[in-house]
Length: 416
Image 1 (cartoon, rainbow, N blue to C red):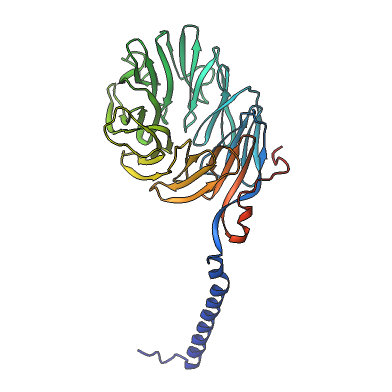
Image 2 (image 1 turned 180 degrees about the vertical axis):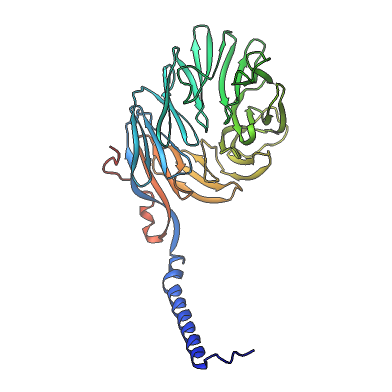
């Protein structure tokens, strides 16, 4: 129905203005937007000129947690900086061979082997430090700041768990005095209730086992030093432990990956799923309690099938179902996860993919690469070599400018 109050002249003017605006928009798109996305532009990994150098033997290590900020650790300093060259904080230290354990927003730094001191940081700086009486063999920190340690005694081992509220005395302590039994890994659940300990027993052939123990003494009442379950893996070596969401523990061995559900009660450990492997794993990584990925190596002698091509990246969800796969076409020596994506590769050639296995980009470095990780997003990466590191960004550039794609040149260190 026609509006009797409608002014015909205003209606015609409005239509003319709209048509003019559409014409201007079309011209702008044709002049500026379409040429930018035409064939003379493409996405490339470009050097930003932001980076730093370090000594070859500085022990440089890096960690990022889906953030523009990242940790930069050397033998004399821990720094928390961002991709725009801003140092948030720094903490001096003195190590011969620093070792970094990182999970989420937490990092733990200590001597690689034989040290007595370990420092734990998060984005706010130093959270706590522990000093042990016996040399440290290995240590790990989880995403809620629990620190687990294996120390070596004369004729045995000590296993400890600390957090920022219990530093002078441990939350958990268990001694092992047996020349044929060696602990190799300790994993603490995010809620601090459970500890899983990998044990290698050489007393009869070769056997690996994972012991489940309570950390809190009240929960441990009625058990043998808090132990409520043990999972044996005869003839296999446990290569990785990781607590995932909902206190699910993933155990990776040389032949399988199994998930157990831990809960209240002294016998509350049940198997949820198992993935039988046909190839050896070269790397396995976990992401925020929800996903994990591994890269394949040579075919296992115990399998009857053909296995996967070497360098196949498999991605799984916490339910044990595959979400994607990607074939590198070569052996993987590097695997990193971040921003619901994966970086995989080796030497100087790397691929990024999402959790469905869809490729994001490919990058080839001009120098030997020690580490490569996501920063702000999947298009911003830190590339670390033997004595230098630089931040690269994936940008849309003209083809004639691609000769600058992989340039690495830093005149001075941007860090104090």
